[in-house]
Length: 181
Image 1 (cartoon, rainbow, N blue to C red):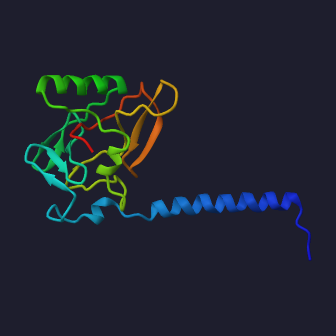
Image 2: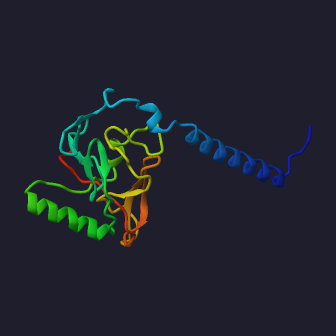
């Protein structure tokens, strides 16, 4: 019987950690692009699409803008450039829209935003017929997270992961929602 020295155990643990890390990455990379998963706008989805660039996510009851704020829906495509604001400015923008329209528009929460995304695909993790031309980037949520006041939560649209250590001074796009989960 051979003796395993403590240094040997440390190396084994390091190798196993590295293997686990790289296998975890490989699983994510094997997910298909959402454009390959959703082949037609006629496919059943969890959204009811309206003609004005809005969609109702039926499981949550949230009405969501199909394009990032600043873009507009034209012929089933989001046209124009998304407005990219700091978290504070995005929150102010949503409050102004709410005041001017009389409707409860706001940024989605960190728990609502992933529900609007698709788990079975990536790049970006959205149904391209519900959210056409969706930019792969971080999108603001209204959530603050548990860290210092300088950070807020965003969702990375490539995979749909929430990140709550995003510096609130960074300019990023955002969607608007209304309704409650």
